[in-house]
Length: 157
Image (cartoon, rainbow, N blue to C red; front, side, top):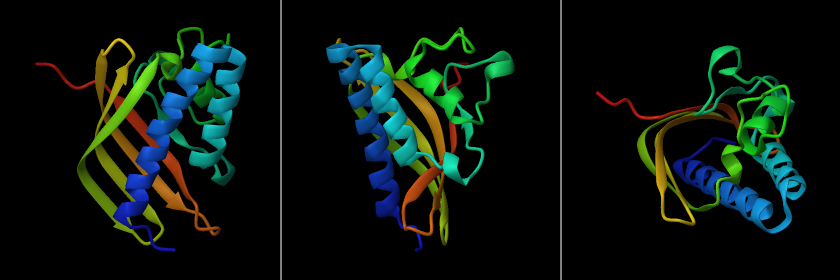
């Protein structure tokens, strides 16, 4: 049940593949299909069934900076939720490739933290590189779940 670095690599890969799948679903079949794919991603990769997920997405602010429930996370990824009027749908930005670069890892049995950079590239070749931290917990069923998601744009002096 102990987490290893391969588990963390697989989790980051699954997250990146999910961003691409949400974008492709949106492009091919619209917002309803993108929402279904995003819901599935949240169920499979995030630990909302374990309690609050500490979720701070890249482009959020004010009273909605932090999202502790699935509805807030889903809104961030696909938008179209009047409760979150500034969400434009980060997951529906035509992502074609997602890469990560590790800065540091902390592992203690069934809990792990990963910190580094995630670069997302869209179909026009435009990229966005974000500072990212993920906290993971391995469940009793040996499934790695995200329980902390913090993302921000890099500091510019």
